[in-house]
Length: 366
Image (cartoon, rainbow, N blue to C red):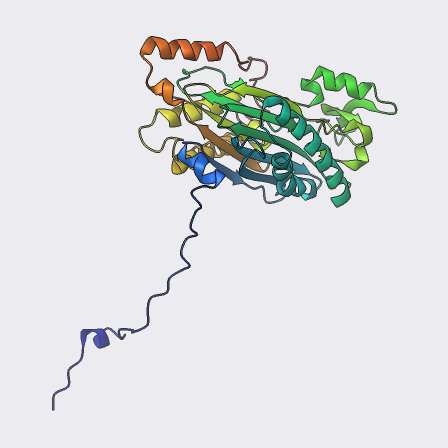
């Protein structure tokens, strides 16, 4: 009697009758949710981060929502750069965007500024309860798709910029945030010097000689707006600087990043990266893979300049052009572009100075 061996048995295995394992099906998205509706309008966003192994204090989050009464469609992004542990930054990540959105019956400029000021104050109190010694910078950028506006509210030096589509090589970005580092901000310097019992001076190095930025003592803060830092008393102000600008008719990218990026990369260099992405035929920021790749490129460029000196986090929010702009003739579109450019404040050369680490020069856009 002849025996037949199947090819499978010769290979040392048998065919299994078991069904292949599959993971759970992807969640079904609610087409009426603010997140999906923003995406369908062309607003996309992504965050890239590289954590320093000894720090891990950057936190970030994004929330899409509608204003409570007027149903204006918005997306808000947050980056918090913590110090003395991540407690304050974590509280900001979990609390702040929900606190702002819940206060917005309508999402006009005045309402957003008031909601941010109130929510930042409550955040400060929560941080002090969570860990009185931990502190954080916080920057929020809120894009209102209904009004085509972006509002930035920040405490500290986690900077945010706006890069218009159709901008040219070498053009400076639009400044959205305010630096609260005393050496960059005369108003903050004056406020702190006016506080009783506070001394402003440099720290000292290992040889006991003055070194580095001017700092406020007690506490030793160089950046004097933030949340938490209970040991620094009245030196710390949690009142955010707020600024609202109209989104350009030709669309733009809003970039917010921690100082792990800005200490190594010029603002104009980050703008160059955004412009290069917008010029590509595929993978532009208008798609989620494109905006994620752009955020990764910003982080990668910062690290390539000086190495991983700190937690390095960047969020890119891509805002599409107005539908009407796409239908304009060349003269009309140029006129609309010029009108918008005349209404905003572009970054000056002093702000776009060489960063703390390395040259951080212009990225080649050719």
